[in-house]
Image 1 (cartoon, rainbow, N blue to C red):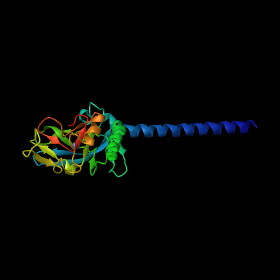
Image 2: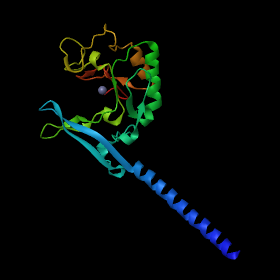
Image 3: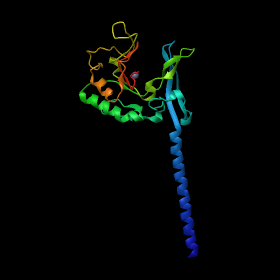
Amino acid sequence: METLLRFKCFKIGTISILFMIFIGSVHQVFAEQKKKCSYNTWTWNTFEKRSEKHRRVIKSYDEITDIEIDKSSGCTVCEEDQVWIKLNGLTKVRVCQIYKKPIEEVLKNIIASGFPIIEITAYRVGKSKGPLDEHGYRTLFSNHSFGTAIDINRSRNGLYKNCLTFGSHCKLALGGTWDPSQLGSITNDSIVVKSFNLINWNWGGQIKGRQKDFMHFSPSGY
Ligand SMILES: [Zn+2]
């Protein structure tokens, strides 16, 4: 009888230890997953006018550098900090997790209004901003890199340079011609601008300076 009891205690003890080891390793796996930061990226070369240095970055979350974090939102270039937005009839896009709910509301609002969203892009990592290095490469990440910017209907809302105010002197640099009379082009009084303004995001068509980015929305508009 005593032997049987001792055997049972031994068995329960062994099972408990194995269970604790299992929980420990699950915990460790999650901790390690959380610590990773991975993303695909490229760097814009202003001399060649093309994206170069395409590469995949995988590093520990602890090794994230200053330029890989957007200071105002806390969003990073890491895929691990991005979440998908999937709405009926719309191409799925990724945004920084803190903007998932508000951006979903904005897009639902636009869809309900009947304004056609033909193209949409959000998170995509690339150095296309900031000062140039000696080889003509940009040195800072765009807002899209942090999942804090959205482009709508690129083919009807181009990015123009030399464009302090819009006119025939403006030079189309990316996307298609912006024509306020065309379906899918965005204007000041458009439901698209109003919906984004409700969550304090601004339109690239209203930014100051020599650039007008009619497809683009972000907290700053840049
Ligand atoms: Zn954009």
